[in-house]
Amino acid sequence: MKISQDNLFSELNRKLFKFYLVSGDEYLLVQESIELIRSAAKKDGFVSREIYYQNDTFDWNDILASSYNLSLFSEKKIIEIKLNTLRLGRSGSQSIINLTEGCGDELIIIVSSPKLDRAAQSSKWVKLFQNDGGFIQIWPIQGERLKAWLRIRMKKEGLIADRDALAVLANRVEGNLLAASQAIEKLKLLLEDNHVNEDDIQKVIADNSRYSVFQLIDETMKGNLKLGLKILFQNKNEDKEAFLIIAAITRELRSLSRIANSIENGVSRSQAYRNNGVWDSRKGIVNSCLSRHNTSDFLRMIKLCLNADNVAKGQKKGEVWQLIANIIIDLASHNLEP
Image 1 (cartoon, rainbow, N blue to C red):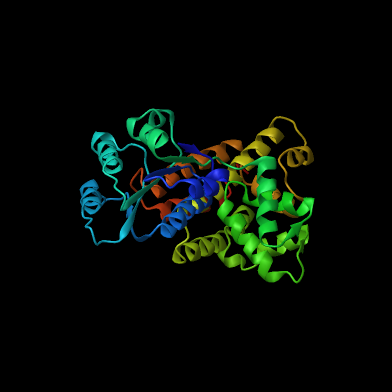
Image 2 (cartoon, rainbow, N blue to C red):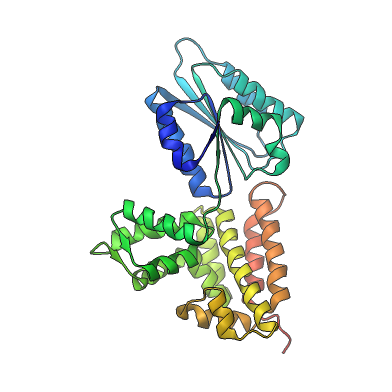
């Protein structure tokens, strides 16, 4: 059964399926959907939980063995499988089918995966979730929908934001709802009242900047390589998700490539900034970056980000933090001919 994320809570109260597939690239929403399923399952007596990550030691036989190892007196169990690729091969696809078909009353399977491509959507194992289980597809939240999401999220925390505050926050976190959620949590802790304006957003983004992906991007765009690398490896030491940092850098590079391309094609700088939502407080930073790079530089760095993203998600081999560091070095450097 296809279930929208908005309707997931009510559907879980109505019926608990034996297996679920949560698919999408928006990490926060995927995790929150999984937590809703866990919570509903726990109310139904599913206390024990096992998590399997698709990595170099991943073995479908271990999961199948665990699913079969249930006795009359054992606790009800949740098995979570976190896929980092949709290319499962014949063995992996059949293993998921065997798992779901073997689900009894004592077992719930929760599979999470990246966004499904066309080939995956037509595969037998995905159709099994669509027809006989729960299938939750997570879609990106952008533009006006993002502002509405931020408004609702703030309201849940007892905060009221004006239009400019929402626009600034949406501009800085688009594509990274986890960062947005963390910013809202900071606002709740720091503000004396519940009204949020643009200055409040700017302060929160700058707060604890040595740990912030926003500050990482801004310092790198300024050409401050030493501080940029320091912030990057502090994020690594704090076990931040590499793919979230890559997503934020990629988003900024795409915006920079559009601005640079517009200017190179005769659009005034001020108009290019307006067209791409550059706020007055960031114009100096963007100016600094555009003085060192052109459109082709930004497009080349976007390709480097895509490669690093594949490594971060286990689809290619490599040292992801070194790949990100290389991008930071590239972005902070002066590539334009004098």
